[in-house]
Length: 374
Figure (cartoon, rainbow, N blue to C red):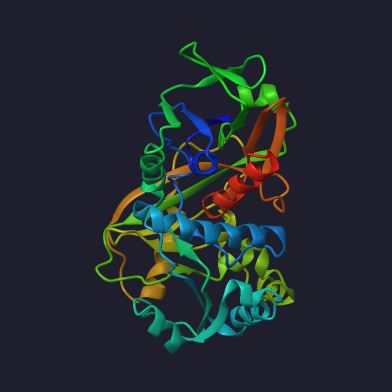
């Protein structure tokens, strides 16, 4: 079988990976020299802890297993099973953590409620004041800025894999073929469009105007090296408000009695933080849903994130090295893990994983391969 994959972000690259692993010939086409979108502009977290029960959690757990397997073969991914800690303060936040522990799938996530001293034993960098911390053993991380490059380096060892950068696919021609902006036609047995947040142009022509996928904008930042290990990923209690696993009467009570700060609420914020291989911290994020998106980045969210992080670390943040905005595609129905649609005979669109893209892409691609009979 000859598989044409359009898009070299993490979703497209994992589709190419599964096809090559199953012995197929693969041509992967990317409009940039390398992917430049959300696949690079994220935390690199394999985030199991907050996923909705059922299909979403099952997908995340399967993806976590696949990431670990692939990471053993591709050290450049920087895979590490670092887990996560969500420090909590006060009885209301502790109550939400306790409700999460009462879930029937808590053991599958590796949930534990640690005292502050136990949490600091796991992650000594957390010297700030907090009362307890929700630990999730199944969370993990990779290096987002280099993961696709490392995967491609491995893929290129296969004689059946071809990477064609700097080519924008403009049209689907005939059956199971695409034409790029160089005028070249690429024929295959199946075409998979993994175009990320590019939802206009050809995607709109193929999928129609009512594609149930929206674009979401975020802001993030990265610091200079911390100077010590941050042994786990870190979240704050605002993440309880963002992730479906934490929905409970305890969360309703937290919202009613101690709502988010004005800045966090205005920008739909949570804190997520993970240490990069060079020691710097990736910190975020905001969520903007209304179009047109702003073209600039705002300082208030960064000030808020800095304050929250420093309160957990008990020390000033290192210098901010870079700030950025990104855009990803998310299913309008957030309970859907991904939008997978046959848009022509033999041509499939796979998009809309939202903030689950880095976490779930290996399992999303595996499901595509299974459903299409690769």
